[in-house]
Length: 231
Length: 293
Image 1 (cartoon, rainbow over the protein chains, first blue to last red):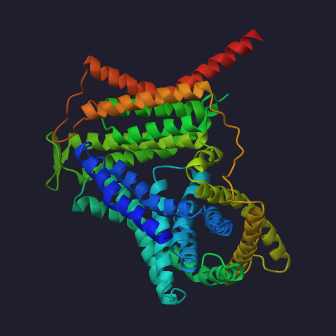
Image 2 (image 1 turned 90 degrees about the vertical axis):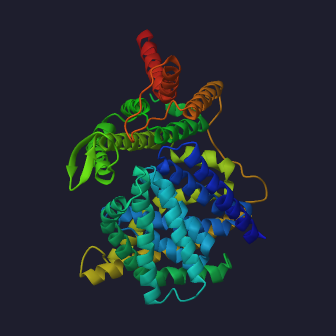
């Protein structure tokens, strides 16, 4: 029943609200408002996850475990404050997703973004970060069911994918929608400016995933088995 | 002596939602001038020295963003020169400057937001809309400083037994860091279960959650909120009528100077200068109180 609820809300958002925003963006505000519209759409895309979490009345144990994992990734981001882009947030979110499932993964990523920006400053990038890290956790949760994500090669591939995905959302989508120019020149310019960051994201993801996957997974599994949460 | 901060969180939040969303939206030169002017003055009023420090960041950002548009866009009729067969147009340059102004204004509004909307206000507001999520958020927010504290304790304890992460070979350092992190996570998760059981024992989820807060919705909050909503609606209407539209391509549109447009411009200015007006009023009152003492 809970799964259906999320499906229904997601369908409403994806099939009704997002097209409505796009339509309004094209017809009423005809003059290149892509950046604003992107932020509204990104925000709407987060809503189904939050709503379904809210509606199923989560147990205190789930709430606290998600809060702990987000706080650890925020503390990790603070620890690596001197190295721009080289952060363990995506890796910790992904590992949470592998072990605790898609929903917990999404929430850990999104809450990490929101909380860390409360320390480092909110900006127009907050919704993008929330959605991108959230989706990394969500996809990790779906992949975690396959049971192969503790092996080295899938981990490396996922780390690379997460770096490219994050960079696509934050840098490329950000710049292109800001200027509202959709031609090859704009894409190549955005891509070339994003590539250094993309590499840093991907490399840091791979390093942190390889180093942290086993210890954190073991701890989460232990908590899961010992107390029977988020099964 | 910060008067605007003392208003109810809903008033503060609505103001920033209105200011930031409208600033992102209007690319009309007059509107851009109004928003950047208001954002700078509020920044100076709220952040003073910090704002002057930030200039080193904003000025290069402004120029960087302004030059990107003429590089990727060759629309426009007023051609300055041709580079490799691509036109460099006045319109594209002006549009780049307009975008740069808009982004810098939005960032300045966000830096005011970060000063005024502290995390307790944000959680207070969203605790009503989404209790479970805002509880997760506030637990997480509280855990971050706690983890940092615990981290220093673990580091010290590990140092004593020879696992100092600041010395030795790279491999040794990585091993020590991982060990410290691993200890922290084990400690944190077990502690979390304790917290959760304690919450359950105290009846979490049985009744509606209550929250301690010192925020009261007073008459002045209602008054300011009503003004914000009224001015937001009038600006929305302006964008519907088309006062706020300005075309850069194929060539510049005209800036209207009739009475109706000027009224709409001033309604935008009035909306964005609400916090500054409150700050100035507070400062004047403080000065007059001090002089009568």
